Length: 130
Figure 1 (cartoon, rainbow, N blue to C red):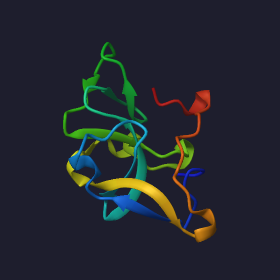
Figure 2 (cartoon, rainbow, N blue to C red):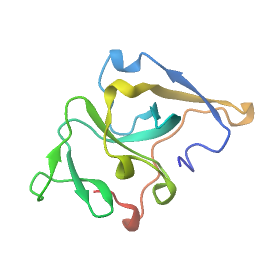
Figure 3 (cartoon, rainbow, N blue to C red):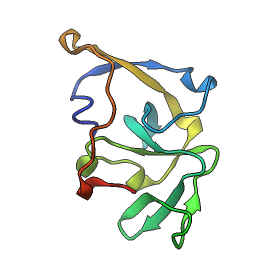
């Protein structure tokens, strides 16, 4: 889930060539396909960040942790802004950059909510992924 950043049934404009000009960065809202569904998530980790697989799924970690591995040059770690109700990289692991469909630019529908989506809400300590 991307609540509160994006609401149900909002339509976004996507820049499909955004990553021709630079790599995705943490904080970017991106669109990709996963399991036959089109999803919008936020980049949380990029190449060089460390990934740890634990008993409850994946999370970003540090190089010194046992079992930590760096994300590859062609991988990103994505999370939903509503971390307690989001199916994201914590469940299915990192995603290849090649599946990214583009970067979200603006919410275009409904018209009375047209806007540029803001940054991720600040997580509470229980929602921290690092």
